[in-house]
Image 1 (cartoon, rainbow, N blue to C red):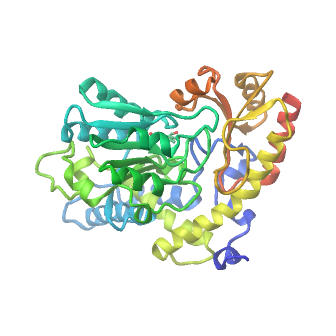
Image 2: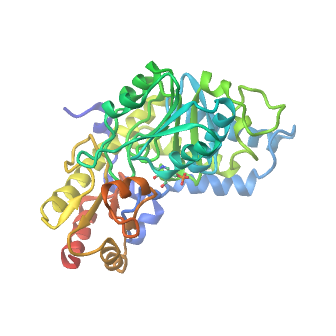
Length: 409
Ligand SMILES: Cc1ncc(COP(=O)(O)O)c(C=O)c1O
């Protein structure tokens, strides 16, 4: 059954035509590192800087417009996450936002309180919490099972206690690619009285976020990996949001995201983010942006574009006995198209060096999932080879990459 949204979706050629950088012929397969932007995003930033580049909050007309752009971008990103029960903070990066959040909690919690960190996490949502052990917090690692490469629910249940205040975990590991059941983990953490801090960075480019349905307390993603400018976004559920004192000036009201935003968000970045409304509407085959419905529809189309690309890549990797996929070995929708592997004879450095010369962008390394690599017995200097696709990649591009891998390996 073809969904109504998919039946109106633009062709892959039309989608690619929206991205000027894709016209160069370079094959971008390092999208988990950062995505490309559609023309409207770059145009909106340029337009804002050339015509609207004044400070917020003054009475004159141009300033009123700037104020509105920044306020609307906050509302839009909150809507993009379906943040009905809270609001969204914008900042320079997800790493900065997680550090800021951990710093705020270190002042709100008490020494001896427990914090649980998932070993599958990117260091951005692990390190800030791990460092709090220096200040008397009881930081526990939710261990990954090296066989399943998952942090199990039983493992979490074995750690939770009445002192647990925070459970920090990734929605998708940026190395493994598997989608974690956020709703289930959140429900279990909430039953123990803890708040959850979810790293949604590796999930956000691939599926619609629904913080309302999952009932999460905090959820962050990096907008530059979701076809936007280089910024980070952090949703906070209202009660979690209000219980913290932000690092910004004391006179900023408790319910204002600005309390968490030292220096404020990038103004031109906010203009670029707003232009994504147009792109998402285009993906659904419509002219008009209609709130979260458009976001959901756009991500339905994104998933449909990605699945054949993901399958082609995984089918090739699975056909090679010398290759080990580090993560799920199936190409269905329970994972995203961020696929890591190692080879029994060639190192990731050797493999990527050869691919680099051929106008194809992939990468090697520990991907900042340093602790995960260590536990899985992966050399952290070499790490893995990672290929990560976005909805604008094609099966043909994967075939070109596989031909190259075939000769390199
Ligand atoms: C899963 C994950 N979390 C967090 C980050 C950090 O994001 P940022 O660059 O916005 O700090 C990354 C960046 O690669 C990531 O992949």
